[in-house]
Length: 171
Image (tube, rainbow, N blue to C red; front, side):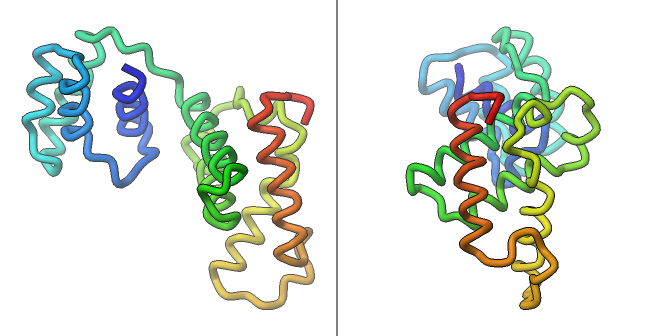
C-alpha cells in the first residue's frame, strides 16, 4: 500500500514528472491490492490524463488510502533526497537540487505550517538554492554568495542532510 500511496501523492501533488500512475496501479494489483477503480486505472494508457484524473479519487476511496498532506509529502521526498546523498546513491548537486526544488516550490511555500520551518539546519536553504541556480546557469563569479565554493556548499548540505535524516528538529 505504501508504494501506491506514494505514487498517488506524487501524482496529486505533482512531485514526480516521470510518474506513470497506470503502471503503478498495475504494480499495486500485482502486489495483491485490488479494487474496481484500481483495475480501471491500471488499464489506462499513461497519457490518458482525463481518465486517470477521474479515477484517482475512486482509488483513494475504495482502498481507503490515507494520504499525507502536501507539506509532509514534500518534506518526506526532501528527506529521501538527503538520505540518498548520505548513502552515496545521489551526488551532492543532484540531491541538493532535488531538495531545493521541492522545498522552494510555490505550492509548498503557500503553506504556513511546513516541516522545514522547525529545522534550524534549513536556515540557509535559500542561499544554497541561489548557489545551485548560479552553478546551473554557468555563473563563475560566486563571490557574493554565502557559499563561495563547492566545498563550502557541500559541507552545509551534508549537515543539512544529516539533520533532516536524524529527525532532530534542533538541527
